Image 1 (cartoon, rainbow, N blue to C red):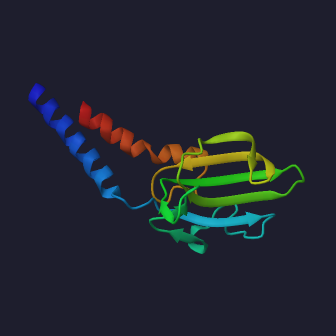
Image 2 (cartoon, rainbow, N blue to C red):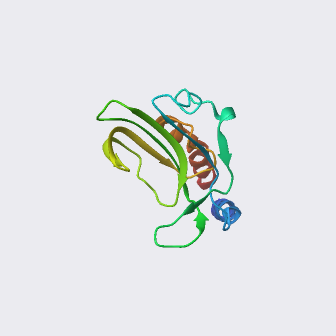
Length: 147
């Protein structure tokens, strides 16, 4: 029984190694679009990914650096400004923007809405609950392998 448990633990470690190794130096792949006051209805919710750009191995500029660097996260920003303008942005970023809802500053505007950050390919069309649900298969596999 102990040998089987050790074997499963090694399987999990090997699986995680290949998952992270597969990422390599390439960036995450994310959906890219923006809509202000419904200017791109395909970008707004409900989302239509077939009509948006899907950036594979997304590269983004880095402050105080020359060139572009592989992004690590996808992000969906949705909010309403103090003037009542709605904004929806789906893009890739270098750093985790910490998923949160409330009042935040984006560029020169103060918005009330949500920032949803995720870290697997194509995850930014989803609502907050769908991002969490997308992680459930990995969690279930991990639990099964460690039993």
